[in-house]
Amino acid sequence: MKTKAENPFKRKRGPRKTQEQKREYDPNFPAVQAIWEALDKQITGEKAKPREESLLWSRVTEMYRSKVEIWDLVAEIVNLIDNPLIQGTVISTLNETELARRLNLIFDIVWTEMKPRKDSMGKAPNFGSVEQRVEIKADLLKLWYGCVGSAKIVAKETMSGINTKEDRSGGMKHLNWMADEDGTGCVALGIGAGPFFRHRRGQSVSYSGISRKQLRNLPTRDQFYKFVDR
Image 1 (spheres, rainbow, N blue to C red):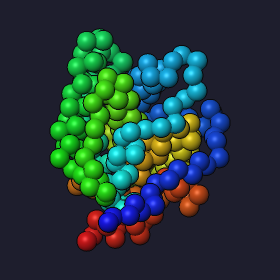
Image 2 (cartoon, rainbow, N blue to C red; image 1 turned 30 degrees about the vertical axis):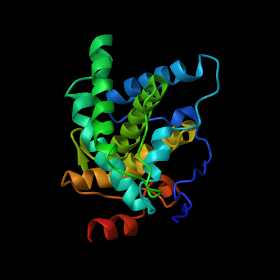
Image 3 (cartoon, one colour; image 1 turned 90 degrees about the horizontal axis):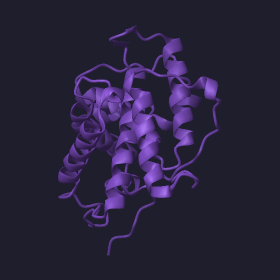
Image 4 (tube, rainbow, N blue to C red; image 1 turned 180 degrees about the vertical axis):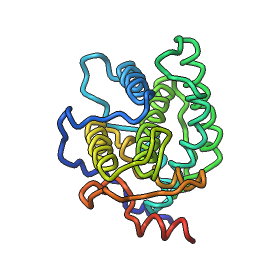
């Protein structure tokens, strides 16, 4: 009989950051955040506390027993939904119909990918209800936000120029702040997947400028390189 191993991603909330430490690295970031907040309100109601449970978080973190395998799985998920979601556009310019189409598309992509996979206890996923579909869409956006944001921070260079140590330090302060504000743990999970997302696309990674304290949602250099150099 299989016993359930302790979840390596059991959430540990870090110190909250001030609003002034928020930083945007992509014009789609604030739009994606606004969309997931609107989706969450459909579930919890306007005056309810922020949601602190996530079917997607639970499902993904139960797929494997090691953090690096889970981070790599999240990187795979974000790699699958990135182009269908963004399609070279700024999300805030989309009309309601096109936005709904893209959200349905990324849900269907992930559902198709995850449905055949069983977790460490041999269970298949079940995201059947309308409310569950809304929740999964919101949390996919949180994974995307954390992962793409992290990937941009650990890049040696982005489309806007070379990343400095100050860029990485400031960027991680913002992302860690966002992770602390997200009660579901999905933003934090996405942050850890950022280096693996870049590796999947054949892109280099640099941790220069990121302090040890800021690594709480990222894999260490040793964890990352040991996994990708297997």
